[in-house]
Length: 296
Ligand code: ATP
Ligand code: MG
Image 1: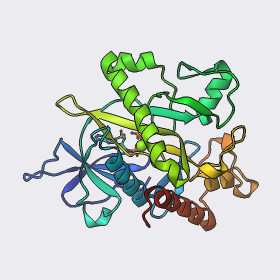
Image 2 (image 1 turned 120 degrees about the horizontal axis):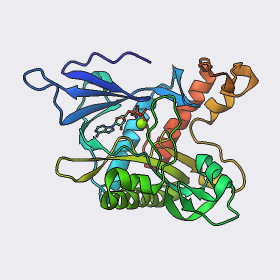
Image 3 (image 1 turned 90 degrees about the horizontal axis):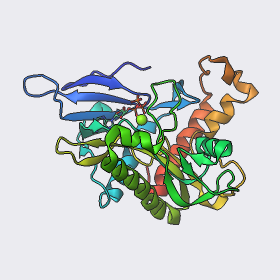
């Protein structure tokens, strides 16, 4: 992984798969514990590996798209954004946010059935303990979006489905219900906004945290190609695998003979060819532009 940046006025505190977190320093040069600078890198992961290749502008797309969604969702839920006034070295791909007590749950909502949710359904007819009707196929639209939380797995491991009862055990009944209802409402609202722009949001993952006051706040990134499955509405065809909006080129190439990589080998995937990097960058930019109606 790339080394943390030396940002004057900030101390590095943590690096996840995609983001690097820094604490602003106070007047005495000590790290503040109430705010974080959330810096999105151009790193990309596939098949649970952080790839050695980066996608230019990806961090900026994720950050700008999240900021746009936070604004759209503000009538529904408060968010962690404090300021976009950030050091020049990370301009456009960093946000100063409230440092929250994070809920240790990946809050997933699904409006369409696919991916890990489909696999679970095919095994026992349920997803994270939610029973679904018979006869659903890949990319079927669900009557109502459902809440299918998962655990936050460490880097390199798969998130595991988490029954709702485990969420209740983690945060209590009242907070669990609040988190569930908000997650589902966020996806419904996002689909209302994206539909006229020709995009379906099959599913999404959000994260929440608590302020000291106990108030629940939307955190992390929201409704980006990394946290959500975007599909082209015009090409939606239940019963077939829908191309993932962003990482399809990466996955297709990695699993093609050309890459020489064996997914089962446990070895690091090879570097991506320039054409795959460029096509992937174009997809991220396209997602941003279609959804926001702005040019990147
Ligand atoms: P992991 O935390 O397991 O490494 P990840 O790889 O998805 O997950 P990144 O997205 O790269 O992590 O890093 C973002 C990290 O910042 C996540 O751990 C997320 O929970 C945390 N985070 C997001 N918003 C806030 C906030 N407002 N306060 C504190 N932590 C936050
Ligand atoms: Mg993350």
